[in-house]
Length: 196
Image (cartoon, rainbow, N blue to C red; front, side):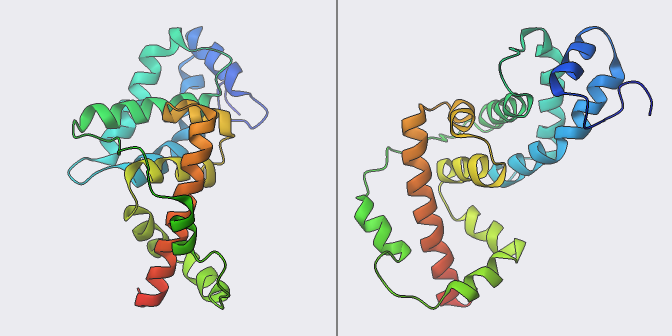
């Protein structure tokens, strides 16, 4: 293996330090390691008319440029996702933030099927295996819901990291995640009922 090659034993922090020391192979390893997650995040959040490849490239260029300001207590993947989020918001000036959710939790729960017996579990599991179905369902959600679901459930970031990337307090992120999950389940159920 060449110096700087992506090696699971080489920590992100070691690669950041080697990159800062002038090792171009170390940065290439970071890109290879985190590119799939960053691209997935961008692709699921991007609005029509923007090119996900362009945003991805811009994200890694921004990472290289801002590397001297990288805080070592921040996980690299969270840092990169935060950069991608900033670029997405800067490239699309339309308001991204939704009005604070005033829908009663009970209404969201009922839409998701709380308290109702269901036989949809098997059908739902089959449909979730269909990536296109899941992507269409996610796309039907408000951007803030998609963002927190992607960060927590698809990328598996811990609550504190997901909150930081989304620019929220941990309590606000937990609240948004609960509401987003309920909306997702309700949309998934709609898709089953509609035969989509």
